[in-house]
Image 1 (cartoon, rainbow, N blue to C red):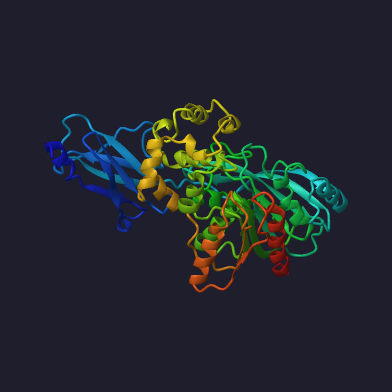
Image 2: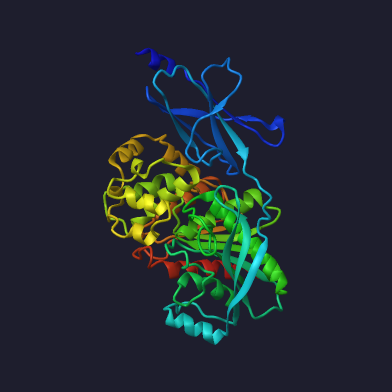
Length: 476
């Protein structure tokens, strides 16, 4: 062992998390993930999404001042791992990570603007549904469809705006429940619920619910619709935040339009929307119970086990129907946590230039996804794949674990809906959640399998039907 290796072995790491009161200071854990004579990589985890971080160092405990480590983009940053590249002759070095609150004076859920997009009679809505191939739902009354924008916070806690759709029924003579539909993955930022069109199936669900006696809500999510930045794909906290704040804005618009709310709230969504539904249900029960009372939820075909089933499916050696999902996942996690300094650290040389172009705004996601290999694994740097696959505490896997939703105990009834023939998002995702909830002694949970043969896309309409069936039985 050289002298330098010996000194590096003595590195001590500190993490201090400062809250509004000094009495609430809390020591958290920082790990030395890797170290050698050229670099030390630190990793830390935090379940709270309202903090950014800065890494400081000093070369002796006798020194008076901690110094910030150099970082492209500066500090603080919303990251959970950082590598210190050591200069020749570096001796002992001590580290600490400082967390600071990202909380700003955001008026979360404030209704900023709204506009009437369309007004349809029951006949017009049924005719449009028939043309769209959606003949399993029948409109009972006319609807008014609004696009709204509202204030929220982005993935880094900064004040921003987002958009969504609210659909109201003609009948104002009775108290109405809210039904929030979380849409599936889209590439085009305009293919969102607020851009209503019968050719856009994701934009039709909320009006269907409104025509059947609900106030239909459909958030666009962050990074889509009128929201700027990269969409936080399969990230728990920013996804839930955008839905919670959309629900607040929708309630404000309902009051302005003189609708009476029954106090009941239903949540449902498919694919990424299933994940969004689950994390929103959890967020409302854990952090907003005094404001929202979830009546029931129906998460459908969602990737709940992000760090296991989802990533292992994407990194398998067989074809995957939507290979861009893997690139989308990595890019969104990079935007939130700063996974790499150079895309070639994760993506292979054939694809990293395209990823870097996308990150710098040069290309669209359509150009990024075109030409991706049918086996997503092939777009990645083999060194990264080997390190990730062989290291259960790899920083990326730990971040994925932080966004898992597979182990959770809901208070309100929950109907998990998933077709066992789904290879895009395997049925095991829902089975895992169901098994965990049952083990917690909770009986208000169902696992419904609408089809043993239907794939991910074929299962959408049957799943929506089973979700609405549950809500109709509970809405009065």
